[in-house]
Length: 313
Image 1: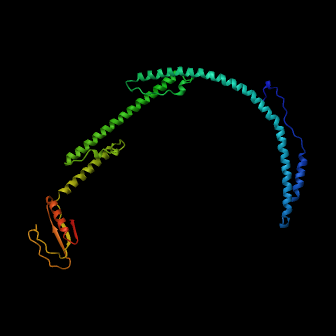
Image 2: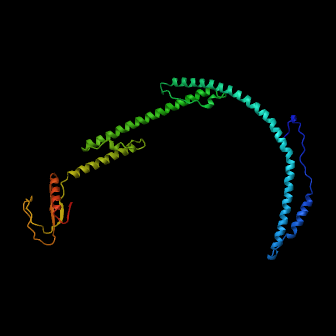
Image 3: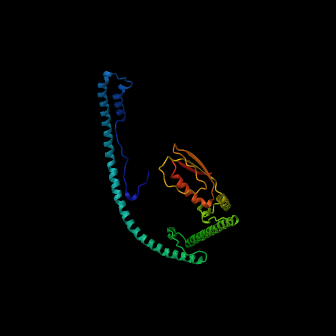
């Protein structure tokens, strides 16, 4: 139990309630004992309901007496609490007024220390100006606490500057490595072009994946070599002579007599008598230089046929 402040001159006694506990227990047992082990029949339900109401009424009456007694005993305690809180409020008001004034002086001291810390930051940045360009260093709140020494603050600032120097060094190395990688890729493409007599574009190999320093340069060179071999094979296939073209068509139905057109072929085809559609297969071989003329002739022939198909072999 807590010891009361002697200035309170507190006089108290624990609350006490006198009542017949044993008598209440006997009363409750007497009302409920006759129902122990009772098996209710259908015709007893109305009577049992009345008994249940009587039991519930007795319980409510007893519980209300408990609540009322507790309320009466607690009233002095509630009054006591209210009075003591009024007294503690007097202390709170005065404490708040003094705290505001003290905080004002604390803020003044923090602002003075802020100026000192800012000077430390400027001094350290100037001492490392050859290694790193000046950059903003935020002042941490804990640096302004009275318990934080200027020595520890200077060491923290130096650590921040060293981290910045290391970060910029790593960044510069990465940029230099990317430049060297781009030059290596360009050199590999030019070497492949010169060796095989082709013209691969350097730009097609400057992809994000190939430019990533995590991608092995050997795999990029292998990709360039594979692309060069494909280009050589493609150019070789273009230079091969064209293969014959097979043309399948059917003879058109009889038409009205028309003016005869000069045939570009050495010998004219025999005139076919009117009748059912016929089918003719033609195989021709031509030079790539005559590609346009052949396609024009095929287009003219297509217009005179019922069906027409042509494919390169």
